[in-house]
Length: 128
Ligand code: HEC
Image 1 (cartoon, rainbow, N blue to C red):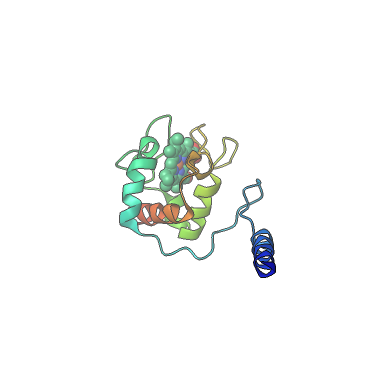
Image 2: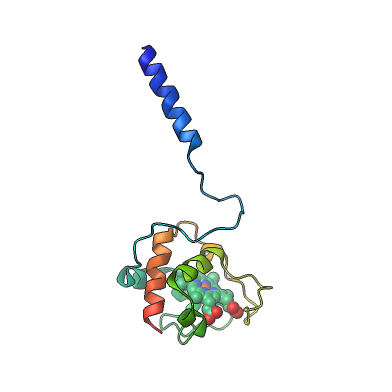
């Protein structure tokens, strides 16, 4: 009984001392430990999550999202930096914004995991 109590206390302490994810508005950093992006999984996600704004052919959709092919931005950024870019989004007042439309952090879809984003990035990189 006493041992069980100690165990419960130890578990409670351990779960409190872990590093919490930064979902408090602090500046995100490039996620560590992601597997290399899988472009095939990324292509599927692209069609379901990104194509509505960027087009199934990545040519952009007027008033929603700009073209992703060709994109010197994508061509010159590393995959890690692109993952971070999609996690952060691009605000209206960002100097690179040319359309007057914002891309929300994590494209407004909190269910997209960092690994999902890495997969989509592998896909859009491969299209350049
Ligand atoms: C609700 C619409 C919307 C969705 C969904 C969306 N985007 Fe965007 N995206 C935008 C807008 C708006 C911009 C910024 C346009 C500008 O800079 O003028 C943008 C910009 C970008 C850029 C920068 C392009 C460049 O050349 O500067 C990339 C890369 C990008 N999006 C990738 C993605 C990916 C990958 C997804 C899916 C995971 C996605 N976007 C989903 C609207 C969207």
